[in-house]
Length: 629
Image (tube, rainbow, N blue to C red; front, side):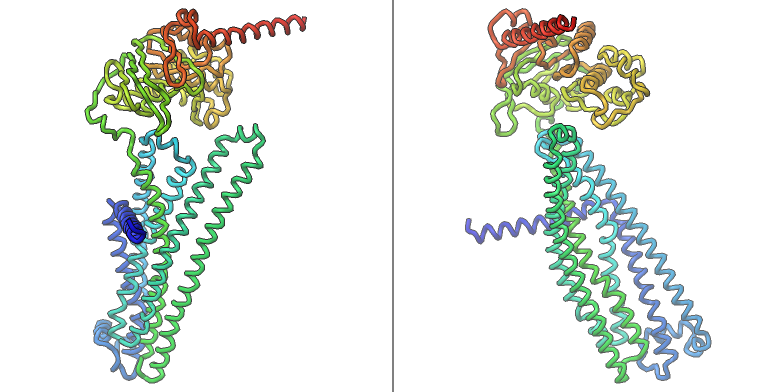
């Protein structure tokens, strides 16, 4: 393909993109288009009354007060007769005054209706758009969030939606206003004086052409500025989320400098955008005042020659002042249209991402009321994109109600098994069976409702402990909650707080210790009473004594649900019915604790290492006790 062909293809694709985004704005207005049409209709009526108001004094001046009304149009004679004739109006000049007040009042009423209807439409559309984006984000696959910047997503859901709202609330109807304000007076102006009509609109094409050029420049400048603002928002979000890490490593100065750089870039792009605005407003003001000046000069010239009446001159001057600035505002309309298309394009990028439930495998769904908890991995292989496989040919089976422990060094694929079970990701090869049914044929929401997971870094919402505990079972009573927190050994800790179970924890549970967060998350999972309980290194922040109490309590509940325990501490997994040891994504050992500790391999090496560390801790504690004595 030649360079010219590539350029033509690129331009064609860009043209289709622009048309598609304009079509997207039209689609966004679906359901509210009739009300928008009503708002535009009200605006047209208001514009008619606005132009009738200055026409009344023009008719009175040229058709009633003037000695020689021969230059008055037939329409003016008809209006004079409608008001009672020349003699009646001369003796009752309050009649034209009443008409002016009436026309102005009616214009105000229809302007109010235009504002009310357009505001209701834009707010309804914006609400629907926000709900749609947020709902779509809830159903996107985890792979999407692995590569997306949270701050940029927040930017798209807030600032970009607001940009679209502002355009729909003001500028959509403004297009109708500018068109109506220009077209409505033309027949009246033409009937009064053809030459003055031409003089009044001669610069309008130049103003519109300049507005189109301005539209293209604003769209490019706004896109760059909006993306820079998204990067800045991401910087703030990331910093606030990791504020403790920043403080711990004394990285405040580095973070401040990083934010300053992004803020400076945003400032420069924003300033460039306003430079474009300044250039447009300055030059368009010049054209508008030149148009008004042209009307004044030519009108005064023809007025001095007796070829134009005073009232007609007054009307043309009033009319051109009324429509020239709405036409000039078309530049603002086009600039906001450029912003809206950019913002809507960024929103559409989210909405065009396929949801995780929209996979071909789910065409033939299997519907179950509940799971027993039997799990089977059959030669499962999984990789993140083009990376080397995280899991390689993994096979194991766990019976319902039994406990499986997964052990291995960091990065060996332990948490990946959990993610595949929860259908956060779909495996590449092999099969995963739940109660004999292929996992990919089961609805994601159903699978997740049957499982409860406690992560190493559990997430708690900035709500009360009671609300956090009831997250998986909203109708749980206090007795069930007390039982779950007792098993998790966190009931006594909760009672130590002033507000007890009604204590509000900080964002992400920051006001709790790491061990307390893990125990609250464990109680939350137990309260759900799941078919499968997954503990992903869930007791890593708990002290050994508390861990023993929790494990003893869980042991007494054995058989209530299938349990999968991912851990580094062998004390956590040694009582499991089955233990599998992973290394580099493969199962290298499988068996019970007694079987694995008596055969060479990674498990026995870990057992000896942890046993030696425990012995050293005991000896060190004894030595400290002796020295203290």
